[in-house]
Length: 629
Image (cartoon, rainbow, N blue to C red; front, side, top):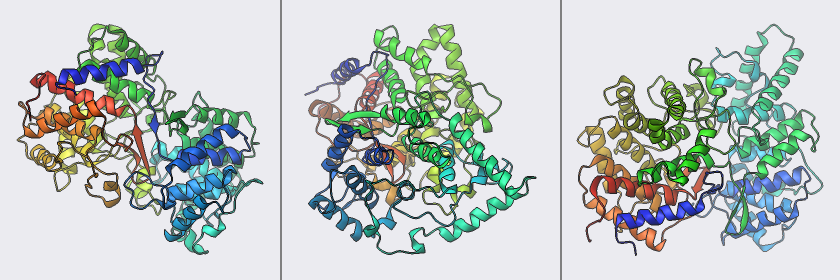
């Protein structure tokens, strides 16, 4: 039993100290559900790589995740199951060769798929994987023709009007779609019996895609080239974009799915399956492998920079000195990962020097605002003591400020890439995949950094405009939506801490409404818990139990806003201390998000980072011992 705040802090410090890697980083897993494991099996079989020990291990993990009704879920309370995840797992298990259609588990999976509407009901990117591997037909017109790569940047829809995440996936796919690439092998299963019906409804957006495809082609035809010359030039440019985006580990922009699609794009260009560039890409994906509960698991990417920056900062907030060897090693690692080259972000932000940080361990030209502000917090104390570190830190601050969008919020990767045209395209999940809008969580955390750690203060126009942007984004009930975490609790925590750092007090109308909303969501045990279903239903949806990470977010937000603690905070504090003592909470439930209602992350680091941060801020402001309940 943990009796006071300091005891909880000391326990967390001891744990993370023991878990630090030799290079100073923390390499806690980024657990990514089941889809990456299914895709890895499909990819290995497609490339005819007989890594049987790995494939067997991945199938064992997938089977362990199957529900009694035959389904696979996106998260624990995902109703009766998820048809997309079930099709992916079913396909991978059959392709592995270790399971057959007449196995009882596979029969139950197929029954669930058919009851859910069949293979046609899967998500857009899953349909793409099925199409690339010969299980689904290509639409007559893919939404983006390969000529998109040649559209000038002054056209409303062009390659660089998309987010970098969108580009990283679209470019390989337009190469594959251009050739109607489908790669089957002797081991490919036949999924045709998973179609509830055949016909044009397979791609319900097909008619809109034809019009969109034709519009882009017509624009490109205005260029002074023959159609054949334009086509060849587009293929060459697409390949160049891909190869320029390959990281040192062989992956494309350090994402699992973009790297997988790049492999298919290269096959469409005529590269053999054993081409060195494909071998390097596959080796890079192997670098995403981790172990969860004794089984291999492929992360969507690694979260090493993110973990290390957040932990270094939280530890320092908890009183660990900068000359502690743990902090020295962590911050040396971070300084080594600061980016010095220009990436796609510079297309919309040409007048600032590089200085940001990326998310993963191998990420050298795709910085993001969130990781940059996290690294800057971790380095802030060192920057006051060391001129060289200050110069690196200051470059990061200047880069962060320069990334403020025209609407005065901040987005993740690029500036001003929230095209309403792209968001309205007849492509499922288009806004999440193709655009990079300002979000309350990114904006709030950036405001918190600038207000608390730089010479940009609350009265500065940068922050005043950001506060106004947040006010406009507040939901009617007082909450704020989170883009990269689950969900309204996450966004409201980030917004409140950002507003407080910008000079907004708790009596401010916006802050008061947000605080009131948080208090209403407290559970009887003192904790807070929100379901990933909030994304699906587009409203706050409670989890069936409290969640340690989410409770820590709320506690931290309230500590930021109140000069003295109140009962809501006491109850939340007791919940945090009790759970640190007994570990009884849904530890594997995801608190991180990549794509709403499609990709969620269980950060294994969060159960240390956010309780440590909330407890550190509580002790710093109010002292050590909570009152007895």
